[in-house]
Image (cartoon, rainbow, N blue to C red; front, side, top):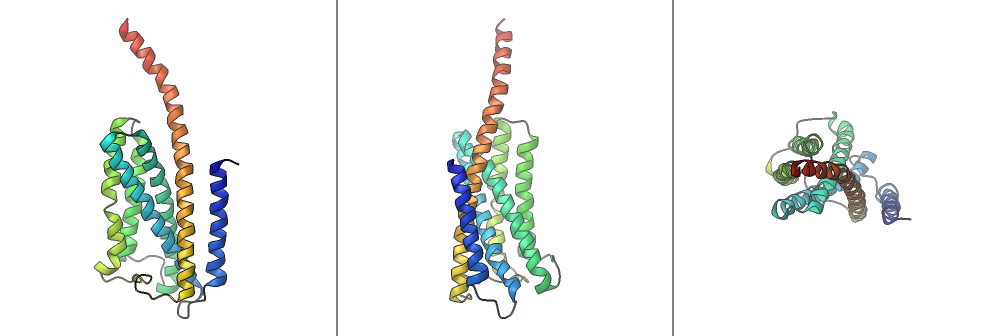
Length: 230
C-alpha cells in the first residue's frame, strides 16, 4: 500500500472509532435527545474547516513572499478540503436545526457568516478554475484566500458578538458532561486527521496536474522561442 492508501485506511478507521464514541459511549442528551449527537461531527467539521483555511492563508502568504509553487498547490488543496468540511458543517447544522428550531434555516449570525465563508472559498476555487493558469492568477487567488480568512474569526465569535439562536461555546464554558467531552475531543482529533489526509491526497493530485500541464506547455514555449530566434 502507498502512503496515501495507508493514510486513507487509517483515517476511515479513526472515523469509525469516533462513530463508536458518538453513538455508543456518549450519553443521550436529556433535552435535545438523539439529534444532539450531530453536535460532535458538526463542530469537529467546523474546526477542521478553520484549519484548512488557515493552511490556505499560510500558503497564500508564502506564495506572495517567495512565489513558491508548492505553497500555491498546498493552498489549492486545502481550499477544496476546507470547502468540503464547511459544506458538512452547514448540512449537519441544518439537520440539527429542523427538530430544535422548527426550520432548516434561519438568518442567524453564525449560519449566515458560515454561508459567507463557503461562498468566499467557493469563489476562490472558481478563480483557480476559470483564470488562465500562471503567476497572475496564483497571486490573485492568494490575495482572495488571505482576505477570506478574515471571516473565520467572525464565524467563530459570532455567538458572543451578537445575540443569536445558535448555542454558545459549550466546550469552553465546561457545559459538556465528561463522557460527552471525551466523545467530542476524540471526534475532533479523528476529523482533523481525516482533513490532513484529504489535503495530502489533494496536494498529490494538484502536483500531478501541474506536471501534466508543464509537459504540454513546455514544448509550445520551446517552439515559440525557436521561431522567435529565426
